[in-house]
Amino acid sequence: PPHDDPEGGMTALVESCLRKIQAIAVAQPGKNIVAFSGGVDSSLVAALVHRVAPASSLACTGISASLPEAQLDLARHVAEHIGIQMREVPTSEGSHPEYLANEGMACYHCKSELYTALGAVARFASGVGTGGPATPVVLYNGTNADDQRDPTRVGLRAAEHFQVASPVSHLSKDEVRQAAKHLGLPNWNHAASPCLRSRLALGVSATDETLRRIESAERFVRSIVPFDVHHNLRVRLLAKQKAVVEVDSEKLELTEGLFDDTKRTELLSLGFAKVEVRGSSDRESWLAEITLLIRCSGEEESGLAGLSWLPPPRFSL
Image 1 (tube, rainbow, N blue to C red):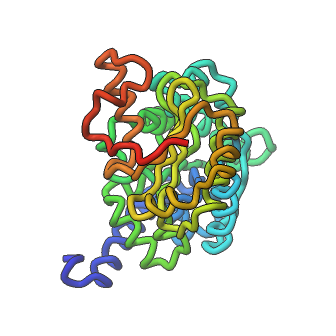
Image 2: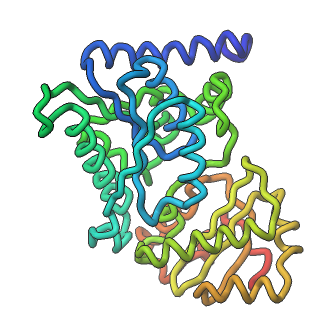
């Protein structure tokens, strides 16, 4: 078992993933395209696919306002480390009214846009429209077992619709990290990196301008508080331009102490009406869960007061 023999267990785990990819590659020999964000899940899949089919693998990253520039830089670094070719593909989820409305299905529309864009890449890669013979193309993502138990991840429906392969779907997030560490991936212990749209409460419009403000706010907080790669930071946006800076509990006191009046004013100048600082919940997707609860219970505005399990704000800016 893995806990009795960590290295032997990880080797077996990685080999099980390689066998799954090998079976897909044998059944559909051709091009292999990975939906690649630079996060640990898709990085592990990119590394595994590249091992199985180095000559025919491609990592594709969707480029839009929902992807922070720092995350794109990390994706480029990881792709270079793996040795896989990377292509940056502009996506236009922000043109969809359902995405902008952000009323519970934005992730579905975002992933649908991504897979549609990757499908265009796939058609080109397979020779369609180029005069050459068409070859099969397989799309892969980094969905893990924990993702499949999260009811807020409606983007998984889009993956099913587009018949995307998920070769690490049997692994937990921790197993994904350990497998990535086993393969020497540089981001194996990086904090989770969901898209910027995930910072928004339901009903807060997911415009490019809003997403860029969130990115600027997180960059500003990082310039003040020293974070290691494994530390979590989110700037969440609730109703009426109320922002919540969410940091790991171990960073809460330090974050609180480093915000003087000048820094508070600068953060508010990004267009927020109010800012609170909180320690992070044990639930990675807590805001999405909160807003779903609010929607079902009919609470007004942010509805935070009625949810007693939330960690209380430490201070307001």
